Image 1 (tube, rainbow, N blue to C red):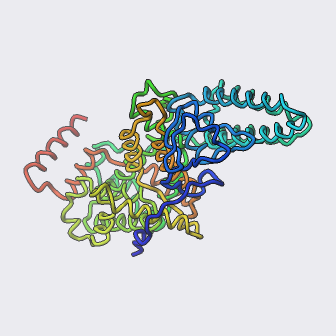
Image 2: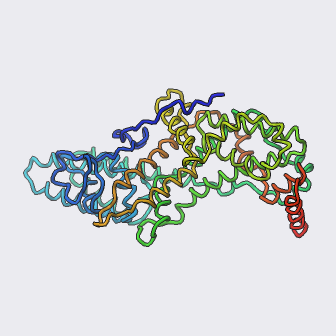
Image 3: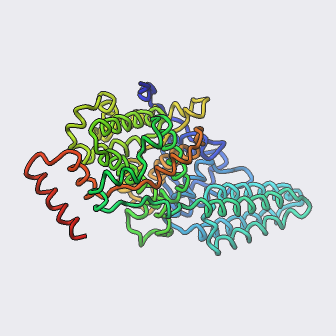
Length: 487
């Protein structure tokens, strides 16, 4: 077995300066005071050289470049991500435009030689707008925001009549924005791929349903191949989740009346990915419970243990947790005769990694090991990191709940948003990894569309496989059959 994830030690990384998500953001806050920022730190608070709080107005000022200053890219990402809690992106863009125009007017009032400075300043503003449109293109779906963007762009281009460089950059920016928005539309979650659910009545005809429907072993008997295809499905689905979607989780845990970007549509991609976890767990339980013969059922259980192990080795912790959850559902767990024939040593190891004790300490250590391996890996097959989504969401939820958005003096608690952006940036880094494995459409189609049982159907199928052992189970079966007869 290749249970190697814990061999890597946790270490902190500095926040990236050259690209948005090339590596994980570290736990240390960025935003150190620079010499050219001394006159711009009013209403900003620093601790050990790192920005921890400030008024919204001062933070906006810090976003806008000057001749001698350009904001740290991690500050740009954190600010643009977090301030939507306080101000709508279109309103923020308008304020940025006002500051830019004011600075431009001051430069235009200078000497003739200031035209060079004006072009330098304009180029920096174009760079800022380009980073904004690349990282948060959906901020510009709004008609008002798009008009504001074009207005600012036109005013910047106006100073560049003798040089087409800035105009070309702006045209490239707008083309890139259109392409990004179009791409997001094309990759929206396909609602029609939700797996159909078998009726309870179908479970009583289990032998017939088995001949009518394929099972997982007939479609894919190789545990590694199935784990690879699960990784494809996972990465395809998390690509539909964006930084602002994850921040939206925080927005909906607080007082939404005080937030500026509440949009229920943003929850759809998050819910779709959460539903996938439940779908996979139920599929695992269905595949086990629907098998009539104990020997074959044992083989299916052991197969899914091998798949879970391969998911662990790949770094696909979300599928790993879903498989373990499916095997721990009561209809599966009660199959004592089946489990007595299963070689459970590998399963016991996997369960220890997913043990909830000490806030899932073992899992978190394994995740850190996988993340470090991903950063150091030369092979694409060793770069995959797919965290347990529900635990990631829980961390975001509690981080938001435990720390206020604003401090008692009214300043934005930027230290909190540094940490939120660090965790969200980790997720963005991992979701951008290309899955290196060959696509098997037949296997993927089965994973996404195979019939799965309802909770009641799972229990009936389980009782059919191994009869009730006590009065409680007998009563449960009697109740379920009575419900079935009323359908």
